[in-house]
Image (tube, rainbow, N blue to C red; front, side, top):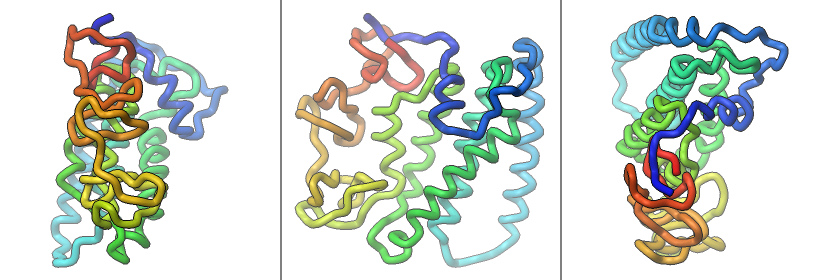
Length: 241
């Protein structure tokens, strides 16, 4: 098989996997109307975000709060991107998909809970925020959801998992759990030890070196459009097998 654009199917995973508190008894909206109104809703959302950012810009501070940065630069933006694209893809036509505002608030709230769970490690210095990795993660998420597809878990883990990393050195101790990468992103915590991330064609059970994904137990480059593939996980962002 070859990588290419897939059909509308990601809304099912969004409403179940993310557990946004959808009400199965909700009334379905018209598919055409939901698509036609998506641009207007996204415009209103962008306008409110712009006002919010302008207000925050007026508050001068020399101290960067990593948790606040995560919540604003990542959680807010990824929630808005995913939910707005869901509306544009016609997802509200199916029972259970929340309205735009409820979708954003639900997804953002769950993300912010995870950010709070990292606060202790960020404060103690055992974890480090890499703000430069936020944009690549959002770009991958946006490219997929705009195609009405479920994010490729292997690709998402590889890119988005680098936003917060453990600060221990390669060969040193690390803590397995919510943050898999260590040594500033160069290593992977395996069995309590920070080990180098496996490279191209190396065996793997999880994330590989930067730019690679673990497919079928081997680190590979994501397959581009029309390249041969054996599963969706092998494809680059926005593509399916």
